[in-house]
Image (cartoon, rainbow, N blue to C red):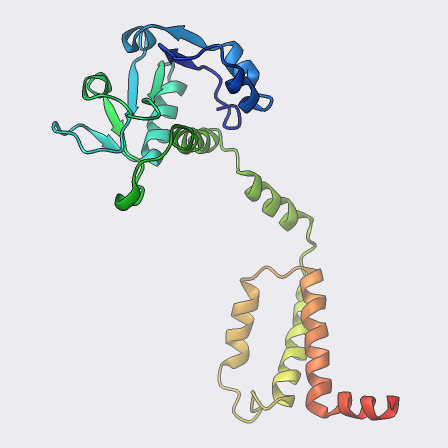
Length: 235
């Protein structure tokens, strides 16, 4: 919960709480346990909640509105941002939620795991839904994921190749293609135009340009046999 920015935990009739084992497993998130509310029934836990989403891995006799975890995250986040109290309800580790408990939920959430082995343990199920809520919250606040931040920062920090540098690269590329026999200057067709379009939409940085030019230089040397002659002179 704490990893995903959630903090309000309500425990319904726990078998062992406070629990030394829970504290040991919390690994720095003991504030979530310290602030946990303990109630005797699910009805008490849901007081004041406008949206209740219950998790289930099994098909039930009475069909119920069903959401997958991603839809659950979006709906939960939308309602919470609108001021509603939202509850994600998880069952017991060994048996999940009863039919009666699930009927107190407006929606059932089903994690689409492999039907041959569909049941997740409680911690895994909580993590899946908490993650989807987190992703929905980030999207609602226009906050990129860490990966997106790193990629954006790298792109901004990378100095783009200039138009004249690109023209020099295209000339170098054309020379290399002629040297290796891939391009016939008498019948060029549209090869260079297509390559211009390919590299033009790639947003090449100066660093990437230097790498490509280095590859082309070595390619031309190899095509001319200069590597072989250099090797002989070294011997």
